[in-house]
Image (cartoon, rainbow, N blue to C red; front, top):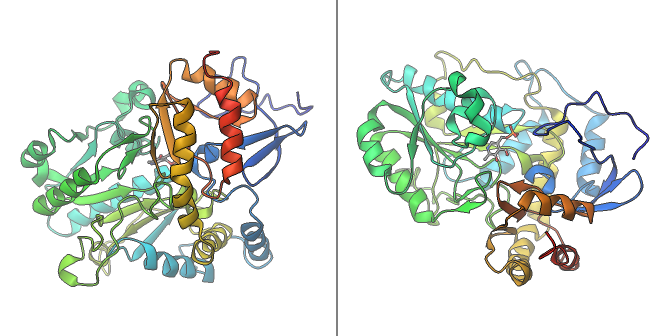
Length: 409
Ligand SMILES: Cc1ncc(COP(=O)(O)O)c(C=O)c1O
């Protein structure tokens, strides 16, 4: 073991009895190194947030430069250059109409803010009868109580049911019917676009997302796209819902490129390259206007708009702009999928995410990690979700290590 005493630490999502954490000493690119110098390929991007590898030289330099200038200030009174630059850069790449940025500091709080924002919008625009939310079956939106209510995974929610509020659950079969029954009393529908990651990397067709957008338009319901896990190239596109605006006012809520434009989008995880806890609830001028000069949006988090996190996020976007990150990830996606399929023939993939069902997934993940490939199960599903700049030789190495475990567990 490590020589450090971490027995006072209560780890997330972990049965502490018998638990032996790995001591992370340093990290670089795809790899995390423990106290003995053993390396672990981070094939889950450290809970899906590490976007461009660990200790990326450019992001490191940006954070260091920011540190000597301005670390953090109260965001209720102040703004700063990096926050403004971040919003400006994001506006250029986000789906149509998303132009106002509300800062929070983790994914769940971005979801809470989105739901409260939609709720208050209707209070202030004559839609007071709208008090409900819709969400997809199998959805996951975080673990604070509002986000947990929106989510549908019993694994996380079951024990807390008495604390949660009811949400109308949709799937491809019942969506139309549910909108007809509850559309007029609903503030917003929240979805993970295209892939429900925590549910076990469940991929659904873009046509369903489009249908949901149409239903939201028809019934005056906000569409909240939770791109916390899917944003920033994870699905091969910058955002899973696509939807860069064509500039025409009449199509503000539709997409020019066959994607879907939400009314509110939640971003976190890859936003800072996985460096710093920061999240954004991004919305339209229309929603913003309902608060402008009226009742303000009374929601705040101490670390909103952290200058260090904004500096990291700005640098990540610059890297996307100046280096062919997205293109390379797209080029490599098929290559990686083929490698994965050689050992897991039933694997499905989108972007660099590959997932497959496996009996004893938890034990497989444990053994793979022991062998230097960091994996975690999602129920009986195992997956890879590496940084976007993983190289082909690293994919081969990872597949070689994991292939040796197939059939042994
Ligand atoms: C789609 C989605 N929404 C929300 C969250 C919650 O984010 P956080 O863990 O930062 O609260 C997650 C986390 O995995 C997520 O995958």
